[in-house]
Image (cartoon, rainbow, N blue to C red):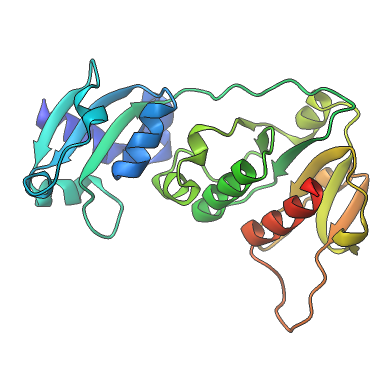
Length: 250
């Protein structure tokens, strides 16, 4: 069982295997704890023998039903983790969809559409930011990083298990949120501090280097920007998203 499970765990570093199996890896005590509390089913729990020889195993991990527990040496944990040092625990979890809520016109709700955000760390941080500001749901364009990528999960600090994520073209998102105000983050837009977000809206954020496609801009009600005062060419997508969401929430 341990050899088979180790092989499966290592294969889940690749998106195609996550899609084929419906499984993904969660690394570290905090992330495993977050996944379990969010109702995700843990198939296998790898526990680092040396580390837990000196620390207490969380009771939550001991209470898991229908979960195989496998004790590993540090060298074996190194084989399955993508972290720089082996974590005390890694879990194989079953993928499940966090349900997307219905859009109710007239309420101050905030949504986000991510157009080809390819850096997994940026994606995870954006999900964390979305969670912080109470974003109802996040849509991602085809070509966006996989939110079940281990790097995305780590960067989200557990928000990936709470924030609804749906993949689709912008037209599908706009159809779902019919009638919503659409704001595109752009270097050429109007100052975000001057925009009235009283009705909430959908924020479009583009690719780190190319920005938003015209296909997305065609749907926007207004282009908005964050004024810069130094000489930096642009802002990181996750930082820009956090600043704009702060104004939208105000």
